[in-house]
Length: 465
Image 1: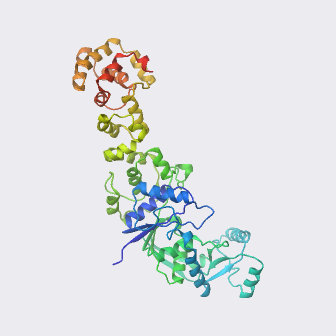
Image 2 (image 1 turned 60 degrees about the vertical axis):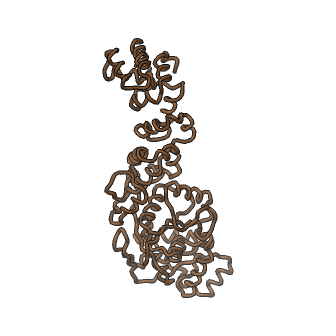
Image 3 (image 1 turned 30 degrees about the horizontal axis):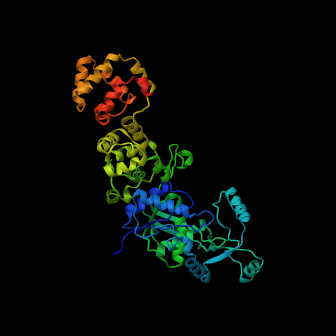
């Protein structure tokens, strides 16, 4: 029985961004078997450090692959190690008259495209070298000219296929033109090695960005000419920035590494990306197996998805509330964990879940609650200056009588001070935390502990600034 086999095939020329990560996720969700392949034939731009970063990012997201590299050491899943394989198929095409050397310079090709565009014609290769004879080719090679290799596109035909997402597609071969499958420097083009590897690795389905749609007829022609099996292709709409332009650094795109360093949880990023161009019935944090179970191609949107930072933060908030205590504790980081007494760990994590979105916010509260010196906001200072000293003395007496009982403490203070609502809680919050916002006072009272509560109520506010 044939199973769905998908892959993610990035070029290691930079850090993986949101669009790439979404492509990887959709292929993982859809594939029963999923793999990673490194397309590093562009040796001038490909770097092993980007391979390492890529694998680290995929692992951080929680993606697992059944085949592909496990470390950044070139092997059969690096295209740079498969040049001999591609050479065999180049030879087969040339022997059958389906590929030919092209000696046209970049300047000649650019001029031809410019003329075609000025005439309202689609730019394509003119076919100048398509009919060079053996003697002409030998003469040019003797002159030291290095040719590219072009695939000979059949004329008067239509390439038709059923896009997994966009439905029936038809391309006239007369509009395509003969295209390069091996560059003049000997490296294979994307069209060629991408298609060859998919066929040889048994890839059955490919989900990729719609910017690759025009590549598909070329790749189908290559595979047909070589009598190799072709995968089924599905093309996903691109992600747009808030300004409606394709997502880029200019309008908000960030790398997965940057998100990780900012403190985003992988569960947040995965759930956010899973819904960029795909619908899920439940608006809650789902695990990768749950996202996989509910992934449907018919739920992939044809309209472009919009990157909304507020939505990403929404999923971050949900993730903080729902991840395990162990994951949340790790997320805080070593420096923050060092501030928290072991006995207060569980209570502090409860506070974090309902009040913090990122570790830097948790750090502020760890310092306020567990350090003797803590910052005082200007607004809190103003409230305390206006608070009669008798109020803090009454608060200190109530704390002495109810050191472990916040309910008893606040009831006693309310009775003896005669204060209610804002007049009661605002100066109390300012004295205990140096702020006018934050977690419930009951949580603060418990985490500060009797000694620190008493000290903060007793000491003049200026001593803590």
